[in-house]
Image 1 (cartoon, helix red, strand yellow):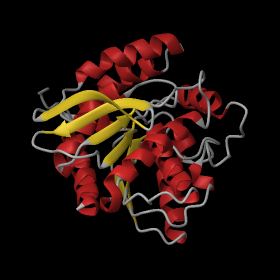
Image 2 (cartoon, rainbow, N blue to C red):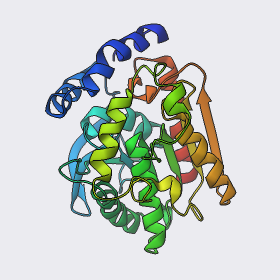
Image 3 (cartoon, one colour):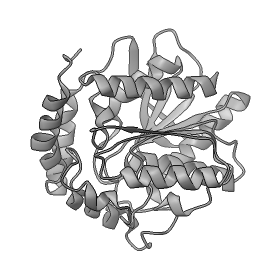
Image 4 (tube, helix red, strand yellow):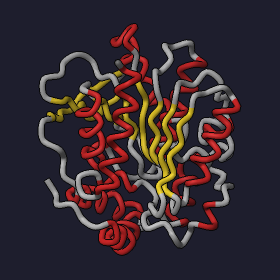
Length: 297
């Protein structure tokens, strides 16, 4: 287990190491994220193995003593162009331990090699099989950053295709507006320790490709939110994508969705990825896991 660090130390780590790595030329950024994942430790009492659902590979993260099909599908962040289930194992393991059920972290295809709707379609294919296996028990969808966008778009597509509805959406700093229209893209550009504007723009261009950034496949904020399950949205006041979280909460409530929105004061984009290192990240992931557990019960 990695030692807990003060918030200021983790913020400096992200600002001076992680943020430049994420903004490096794409081949290098992919290699660096694979290395940087070792900064975060995976909790004990879980097993992780390769699995496939709906023909899509990923991590099956199982807490000790649990059996049965995964009850949560998790989509990782990385601006649609970097990262993998392996980079987020500390988060998915914490969720599995808190819910008491296996988590499937989907290894969706990355842009620019595989632009929209590939990430959404991969998540939907895996979700379709999981939802069938869980039958009446239900499956939750969760994700961080771009993965949060994938989770919302997957939920919308599941409803449109008359698949069993997810029982919950757990969203960490969700990226749901690839038009980059929110005010926090400007006001937090220098405050966010993790996310640089250039990284966001690269990801938006790569994933949208021939589609317009406002297409709901790319930006589920502009899609139909009616009928979505209860959602917990977590962000930080210094998150470049804070406006996405706030706009999603507002529009979802207008559509009749039960929404909880948490804005952590002074925290930045996707600080949850430091679960096990940062107290605030542990507490946020604990609340997220409790929210999912209550709806999976």
